[in-house]
Length: 372
Image (cartoon, rainbow, N blue to C red; front, side, top):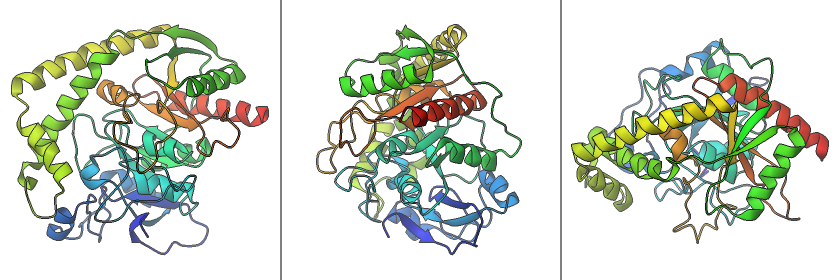
């Protein structure tokens, strides 16, 4: 039961939607994966704003999914509620923080799952579990009624077994949204130091199979974006959750994040936001030269559950959050026979470019299936 914090009985024939337990569902307690929050909370009076389209479509919310405590860790583990088991490789991490959402979809217990993504929390578990995940443009989907981690970076997005399922999820979040009529043809290939050569090759082969015109790009602000991201996350985490410091039921890991935020000065936050503005401008300029940016989602295959310490899970995802741009993660064929978790390709689009991302991902998926 580690996939779910609370489970509901679905109606036959309806789209089954799993909701991360950081998102309010009327009549249920939102735990944010934390014992202290659970023990103090009362049932939500109303749904989070992002569920309006789910209700209007008569989709069935089948449960609240597990997550890492307070949405903090990208690993997917949870000492209070248990750690969801990666259905592709039970010895490897499920990824987080939307771990239960990814596992529910990968295990066919839900058709669509909703997660939150502040530094990769939709894309990382999607990549670890071999499914598709979409991080939406910051500010596109309302976060009223959603547990905050860092409000200036928090986003909501769908996960599904294939791109068509993510399209369904996006329409549930924004009913008037549609897929673009044409896919991208020219993409910028980002090459980041430290990525496993086999992962890079799998992404390159997928791009060639899709028939893209590929331009190699390097972004000067990439490395600086990480420190700015970290500063903003811990600074805002402290601002919104300082009352949880040293409360019974809050882990030492979460308390460590709160203390780091407490130690973050206003000057450091201002410097980080200056870096953020420059980074946003650099990515916007790059996206005038190409239609989309492409890189892997993870630097290597997901680590073992006993060996994740030091693995840079957010290395290729957090800079996208700092820029506020949408990004879609999808599996591509593995090059090594017997590789249980396929490599994951990440497409980054311009602001509010989810329509182009999904059109392009549908094309890539079609070409890759044909190639198989």
